[in-house]
Length: 238
Image: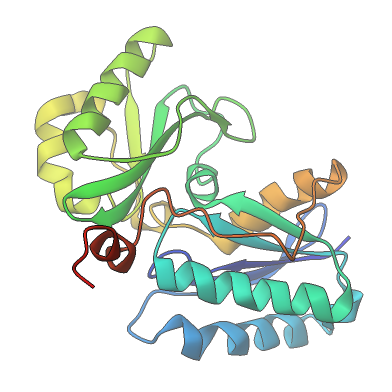
């Protein structure tokens, strides 16, 4: 089994090739250039380094959102194009679930937060006591204060005394969260804080085994809220 994993939902662009038991290759960049410049060259590099073609794949996986509106469209267009061209099944995974998969076998409550701008974050909380994250809350776009309230409630409900916050949504509010949680908030090294295409691939393997595939023609990104243009259109500004 070989699955190509494509992630461009955040400022990070990542591509990985995985099989059932290991990561064969991963490309990951978080620096300046746009996803439209980097993503397909990364796909080519990952496949060529493993002497693999798209026809050799069993499936293609992509992050479905939430995240950057433009980034999601670029990643989904690339994955759809490859799936349609080769008749390979398409697997989608939540960006927040991919992020939470950076941690496993921990008794901490894990919050996955992505920067949604407008003083909000995309957020969800997970149980990571096993190898794969189990969601404990709905995915939502909300304020940092709402994140704090949800975290305190879930820590109480599930008897968790420590919290880990992942993602670029945590960084702008780091001081605020530190004040709210104190020593109960555990810091992580930088390599665990952002989405990894290898984690996307790992989760996709599980969905492949369950034969959980998407309809390429009807598939749409999960945004969680309207874009700026849609919001302005709704109130008659444009």
